[in-house]
Length: 506
Image (cartoon, rainbow, N blue to C red; front, side, top):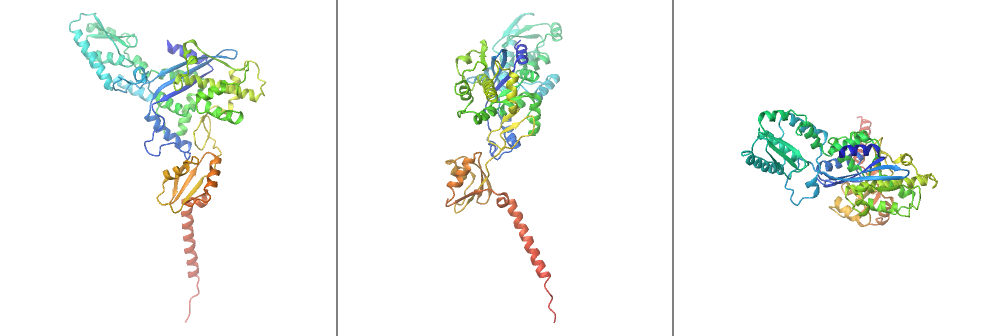
């Protein structure tokens, strides 16, 4: 029933905001896997891909915004705890996502499970599930010896996919039992005759049929597919990692090709809106105070600094079943952050609409008007500290203007490495460092003022000579080519001089 309600909510909504929490963000294994200013978008993608493959999703928040009437938006916000069903270990003292997590799988994993179910080669891979199943078989075996046909017993305290695992194992091990789920955590076991068992197995209402098992194993993936079918704008904040996890966990394993990843995401979600990209632009156009996180962005947009009392400003109300988010701030709870994200979108869009019309906004602007004023930001996902400011999922990435590279020439300070160079400049400003050649390193910053400061402050340094990097002068390859060319030219000159000298006659 929830999935049907969710489907109609998505179809009737204006947009859906998304937020996710992970077990980790950036993997430092292998070495040099940390994000760097030197990364191209494709290089950064491959680094992030390794992290996505290593970490999992613990929470996924969805906030569905519906334009109820005029400028009022009603929000249904949900927080889902997710847990890959194949993970196994004792849950005692474990966090909530492990205890109550909803299973999920991508298309490749679903195909493998389907093949195993069809071939009858399905196995229980979790150590925890094996313990639960052993306990269930022991209970049923002790009970069935004295039970009469049609008698029943109830197995309790099962969770998630265990409800199906218990039934499959019991039916395979005991030919005179039948099973049926009761709710989400119980299974009824009935003693039956072999003939009755055969009739029940052919019934279309058998909950252990392949289709029902796959439906349960897909878990949250069913809702993901509903989101894809709805084709509504998907809103996030700094959402690149969210999109990568969506692709990897619910669609297909991430491809090696960066461009293929972009095409796949654009096919799944034709309209992406990253509120980080929008607020970065607002900083330049409005007196927007510097903020550190999504909650602070929301607070500023709700304050009178940028959004004075305006009857046309969108009114955002949480649905009655989500009212706790109105009563208490819950940062880093995915459902709450998704609500903040969608709210930031509406308030930012209204602010930009006011700026574009010189505050002559007509009463009750529509969501399509907000989308129109956001046109330049659509499908542009923020790219942190890189050669581009955003990833364009509907076209080619556009390089951004960056400060020039600096080259550091070390004199009289032997044995310096990249880490030591980084520490040397860290107190003054932040640079990424890359080794160039013996006693020379390249520095790259994303701030022009940092470049000017370093050139000024290190002008007379006794050991470090800092200058603007010139490719034809500083590149080791060019230097090598020039040296080789010089040697060849010298030998050619010598050969010409010696070969052209007049012969001595006697």
